Amino acid sequence: MSIDKQLCGYRPDSSYVELAVEVFGMLADATRVRIILALKDAEEMSVNSIAEAVDKSPAAVSQHLAKLRLARIVATRQEGQKVIYRLENEHASRLVADAIFQAEHSVGDTPQHHHAERISE
Image (cartoon, rainbow, N blue to C red; front, side, top):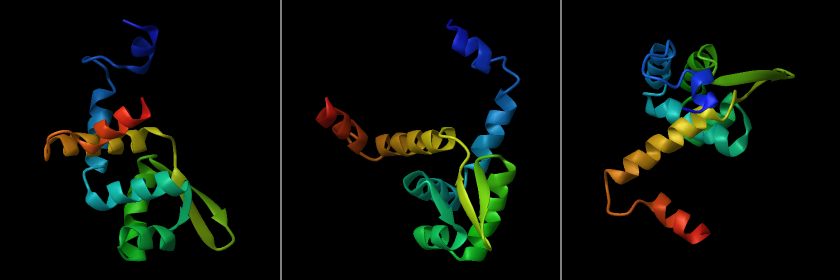
């Protein structure tokens, strides 16, 4: 086993398993997944920009962002009167990407992401 796996708690008996389940629970919402995808592509966005990107009201997006912020999935900074949001790190966007890739496997023969890998080889 690599030292990396020992340090990060990447084992079945890890105390991080329950926290990982909470992260999955936080991501078990289509609007939150869309927010993460929007932030992944744009790096930083205001609530109104995110709301437009995910086709939801700013009030609804703001509530989801508050939950994502408490879970330390998104971070904020002030820009005048605006609050600007960004992903805290790359892990949530990787989780979402992998979930979408897994979803692609359930609906077709060879998923689109496998075609993209062949093209880049």
